[in-house]
Length: 247
Ligand SMILES: Nc1ncnc2c1ncn2[C@@H]1O[C@H](COP(=O)(O)OP(=O)(O)O)[C@@H](O)[C@H]1O
Ligand SMILES: [Mg+2]
Image 1 (cartoon, rainbow, N blue to C red):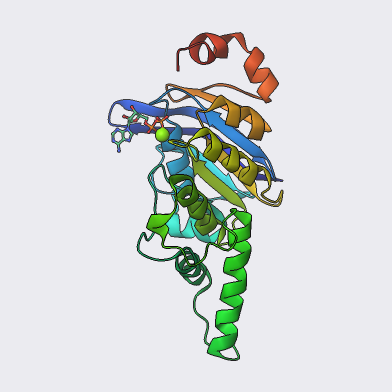
Image 2 (cartoon, protein in one colour):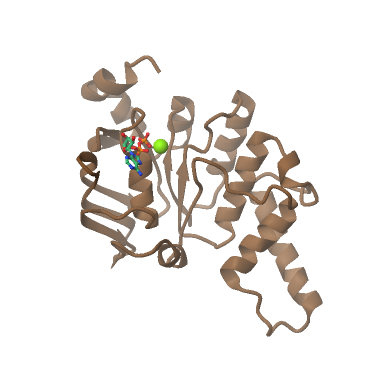
């Protein structure tokens, strides 16, 4: 079964069509990357999947279940997590506190633990596991605002992973990063378990071609092509309108 099926989706801001009959399926465990010039409608598409933006018509189907028009909180409960283009941390809290908040937001603060100490131990173990996943091992006591830009983006992914999502949506996770930070992000995404499907927007072609199983090119709200990285590189129309452009 696919984790996500998007069927004939349409969306507009007034007269501006940002999603134009988009159909796209993401297989379970797939890493799918959306590319396309600025203003192509990439973020708008992710916003529709996350429930932040309403589609005009078409369907969004998650594991066979129609979730079109559902609220972000419901989409999130069904296993979709996301990061935003602008970061979303509690800057004056530590790495650990940011992760603990994300864990309790998702799983509540259950009173049926044997003791407060037992609960804190479970949370600490989960937070430590998240820190490992996002390459922030041993960084729990650092205040978020003192992390480097790249580390802050890593922490955001940790927060998104706290809810044990099935589908992770990433909007330009490497934007503004140095080459070293970008390389770390490629490693991090590459090491995520295959039980998690990833749909990400990315403009850095090194990242695209290191991470993607399949790539979709959006252009003025329409899908220009979907295929393997090799298919996309060889696609004459894509080269003409996108890859060949000064970037
Ligand atoms: N809330 C909004 N209201 C009106 N226009 C918007 C809004 N959000 C985005 N747009 C416009 O929709 C188009 C697609 O935007 P977006 O999805 O952010 O593109 P991308 O992420 O590919 O750069 C752009 O022309 C943008 O200016
Ligand atoms: Mg965008």
